[in-house]
Amino acid sequence: MTLSLGQQTLTRGRGAALDLLYTALECGLNSYRLEAADPVVAEVLGEALSHVDRKLVSVALTLGVGDGRKPQRDFSAQGMTAAIDRVLHYSGLGWIDLATLEEPAEDELPRSSLEALKAMRATGRVKLLGVAGGGEVMDAYVSTGAFDALLTPFDLNSGWPVRHRIRSAREQDMAVFAYDYFTDRRKGRRGPPAPVKKGLFGFGRTPDGHPDRKGGNDAFGFLYRTQHWTAEAICLAYVLTDPSISSVIVQADDVERLKTLAATPERDLPPGLSAQIEMARVSRAA
Image 1 (cartoon, helix red, strand yellow):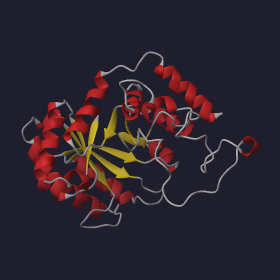
Image 2 (cartoon, helix red, strand yellow):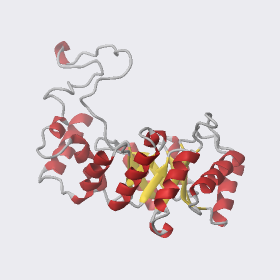
Image 3 (cartoon, helix red, strand yellow):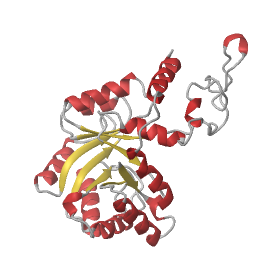
Image 4 (cartoon, one colour):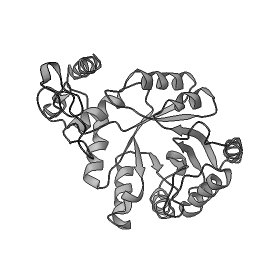
């Protein structure tokens, strides 16, 4: 698993953030992702990782996103170079294992920027390059062969386009990191209600056009009825068992949640649950 770190990591204070990171190390997590080039988060991560051999942990940095210093997206060579230098300066990590471009549009990445990243990789400040996103443009970025890793949304109900993209990435020896592995299906829609779409004879449909997700008609309702498992733990375990996935990106703001997530890879899904998930996927796709 990869622990994602951002502004939310600091909401309980610096001491709590350090406790979270020390707990992550104790749980065996050796992969971390900085959601932006935030100097404070980078400094806290650097302090925690200073107690372990740097070669035993992997740190990814997200590029192109805004932060407190510069809220707008910036994929320029100067902007990304400054972001990497800032993180290295405040963290003292020595190098970034994976520099990831966050959802670049088709024409948003200048060639000069890619050349700058390659130059930093040649000097050892960056080891690998990655691209993150779930849109169709990711297919083009994967096909270029310029990247070492793909970060993609992936859950138990992901469709063929996403699965095909993952397969293409693996065929090019790209590492695949999955995020957005779980959505709580019991939560209502955000924003104003959508127009009601009627089912057969006008019954059995919710405003989003799908069977009632809070009742027994949801094909994935069993996620909330499996003994000794939470729905999120099932979804996490399912994605972790996919041989195409190198790591799953998780978020945890407190120690107890982190411990729960970190224990999931050691658990086996209940017998028959994987088959039930596949049947539910087929049912929803029909």
